[in-house]
Amino acid sequence: MLKRKLGLAVAAILCVGLMTSCFNINDNRGNGGDSNIINGIDYTDYLSGEYSIKVKNDSKKNIVCFMNTPRESNLISGVRAGTLVGLKKNSLFTNTKDFILFVVTEDDYLANKNDLAKLDRTPFATVYAYYNAESAEIQANKVYTISNLMGGEYHIIINNNEKYNVELRQNGLYGESLAFAGAYTTQTKINMVEGEYDIFPVFRKYSSRAQEIVTTFPKYTKNGVEYPVFFHFGLDPENDEKEFTTSDWFNGALYDASETPSAAYIAIHNGNSGTGVSLYKGALETAATTSTGGKTINTGKTLTFEVPMTSLGNNRYSTTATVSGWKIGTSMNKVSIDTLEVKAGKMYYIELSGSNYLDLEAKWKTVEGSSEILAEDTGFEDEESTIFK
Image (cartoon, rainbow, N blue to C red):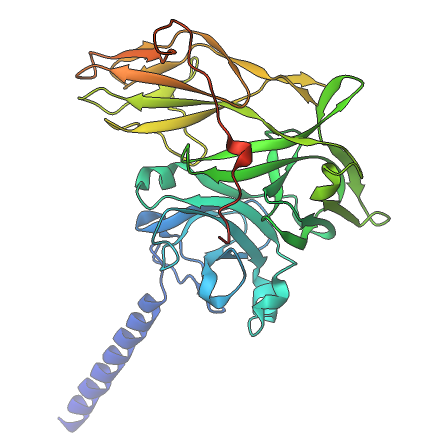
């Protein structure tokens, strides 16, 4: 009888121990059910619940993400190599803002955990990002990608002593973003893989007027022809570093460039009292998104869409583009927008009217008392960065 009681007691203790162990494991589990806390870094995918922004890590390194600068107080969460996750939504994300997504490798984070300031000038990647506290849909539509060209033993260095946030893009003004440096920052050093690069710098900034992220670029004139500032170079054992200083593009040291709009902008106001709508371009059945990820234009609201300029080849771009085949509406009913040629640096307006999804009418806004389409200067190039302000 005594042996039986002792056996039951041991079994009960083991059961309690197992339950306690299970509880401890669950404390470290992410939404997927697996343990996602590695070396103190939270690799949880928060997409199934509340998250801040989406990040896709195409590199071969596990990464740790911060807001603006690498400090424990600015820590967001991590992303494993080759995965797309929703980053943690913590106290950093309480209001709408643009910011630098400052990315370091897991190895660098652990090696410098007691002095993260050492990583200030050596990020693994930097990305211009935007968080919209008012719209879960906008956050759902926008994905920030860490390039698979990151993480090599060679370097791009950016000295950005201008008031603009500069982004280096591969293969064109609208190409893949490889590196980013905020206004008035120097010696930002990005690790890159070996290879040939065609880099086009652009400036990114949040416009409070348009409530969108807008893009401009440095442009110069040669023999009467306008070109964007452009660099072709290779990174290899004999050329292991490429350094950029933004002021050199403007002061005549390399170019005598000026900041120029790279796009036209279309502001669509939904005055239809009965339904939210989306924009559809050409034959596409997928709704277009804004630069921050906006897709649905609710009643009484406005979204601004960027219209990129057309490539002319030989690293040149047009100053006009044609809006053609655009439709506005719902999956049940869409109305067509009249074709219009638009100019870079200009803002155009579309007004939607009606009382339900079957009663939609969309028209270009005209100059008062005229049939001329209204085109206003954006003034975006005069707006300074909001980062660190």
